[in-house]
Length: 516
Image 1 (tube, rainbow, N blue to C red):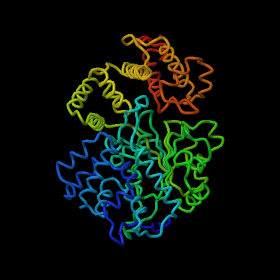
Image 2 (spheres, rainbow, N blue to C red; image 1 turned 90 degrees about the vertical axis):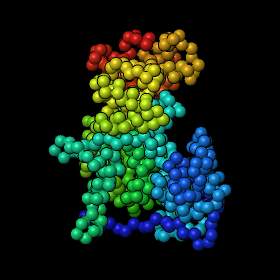
Image 3 (cartoon, rainbow, N blue to C red; image 1 turned 120 degrees about the horizontal axis):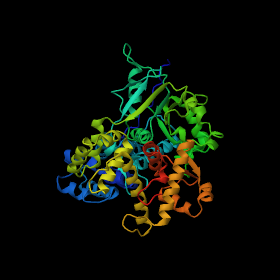
Image 4 (cartoon, one colour; image 1 turned 180 degrees about the vertical axis):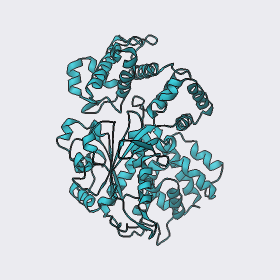
């Protein structure tokens, strides 16, 4: 193993001339308004007596939106003037706002910086951290609910992971409950205790598998968010690429998926930086099984995974079980996500109903008395579905798994009708929506039989005629392809997969809810 090269220290916020908190806020107002999580920060300003309790807290928390709360906090700090820029940055660093603190250090006209990446590379890193800390900080587990967002920092719940022993057996990993823990473990194993020298691990390619809805994509999102928050400083830069959107070479997809169109750094220059700093770069590749055949013919992502290009870079790739096996056979470690433990399943429910602890306790009690649903609640997506259905169903649980799926698909269609002002008679859908649901069920069943996750939208329009518009609009389609997985139609797929074994027939032939 090669000794690690010393990394450049982070910039230190040390103003040469006096700078007020008002200067700092004014110069960075747009950034701060967008990215501050006031709920996390305000207790620490109060603890340091930089703000007054309870008056100032009430002023900030009375605002209904996150930017509104940030505006109120910044106005209070400006008015009082007791907080120094150094104190402000220190509080940010200690309260999961490392990404914001880093940018303040870079943009401050009075900061000193040590030798590090070029200015353009720093801009790219800032763009990535901003993306992961804002858009990727929220998950939308139910895509048909456009206003249903969960903040990772508030609801993320530890999962159970198992690690392969290299002989086809998987063992529990009690200390690894998130993807970030994998890298913490690798880092700790890379310490030579006799010399306390950090020896870089040769484990660079990591494979993570799990069933649909088990938390693979959310875990990848959390890993990128952790890096942006300063919790994964092992890497200088992290690229999170979704395989279902991949259409070209890796260097081009970084710009296509992650960076603004007006990014000043040319692709060749960024690629040169990656080549020169491979050991400090992590690629998170989510959903290799969703990579289209057309993309496979032009992309070099499999070469990246197999170490045929930029071989010293670190790669974490996710997939469903038993898919892409040949592509992933050269990975150095193999993990499996198996879902929540019973304790963590309950913990998520309490986080979901954080504003109503009595509701959480009531739902947990009902689940305890329903062995079928309590078992499937160990799957994170199912857990969310149970919470949603319970809320929409007058705080009563469906009696079985198939009833749960039918209820949630019914809820999807009902929300669509409400959104489009389509009249319903009680719980009965109009014929056009019934036809769209039958079409979605048929499409899902065919996808299940053919192991197909994506369909060309033009082909759907050709095959389903006027019904296609409602089929596509009930869930949020991609601009080019219609995905069964990781969108609304995963539910239809799960329904077909789970219920067909009970009823012996496809979803589009089910009775009830107006379906035939």
